[in-house]
Image (tube, rainbow, N blue to C red; front, side, top):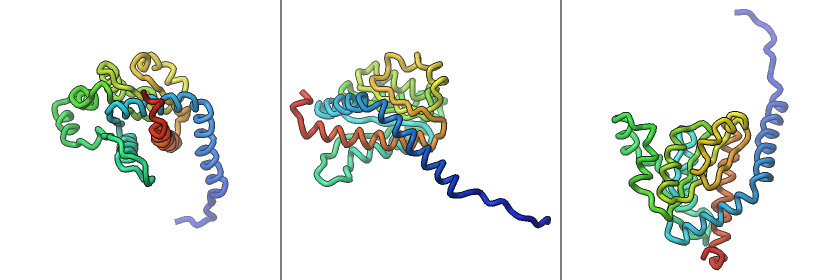
Length: 211
């Protein structure tokens, strides 16, 4: 085994670059999307006010975001905030694995929404990029049934633009984190649904705005 000097990475530079990326992307995103976020919160609050539920779903790592946002609404961590009905479709492993066994995995969320969703509900789909037929299929089903639909996506702007028509007419609120780093996309999505949760409750404190 040859011995020699091992080059050490500049950990401070790596950390600084990482932190810059993790702050610059969300700062740009929320600066651009603030008005749409406010509108989405109002629309979500109205659906909850009408007895609707949040139905969240996502593939792979995005499944954990669906679970996270659901528990935020069902089990508020801030004392005094009301619990609101939310379900992560990703939690139903029996149904998902059953659909996989009959080669219907790509339509699994759409199938769940077809059976479970009501017109007053909210559908929230997560994907790390704009080319995700599985999530598109589910939001199309939700739109047909009259649900409020939100897509939280990420990825390269050029690639998303090439697939933009797939989202036209099926998504009421389209939020795209313009990044290719899946960690930065997930970090920004997490902050976004925390903001959605918080502002929904702000609207509930002024219920006259929900009629």
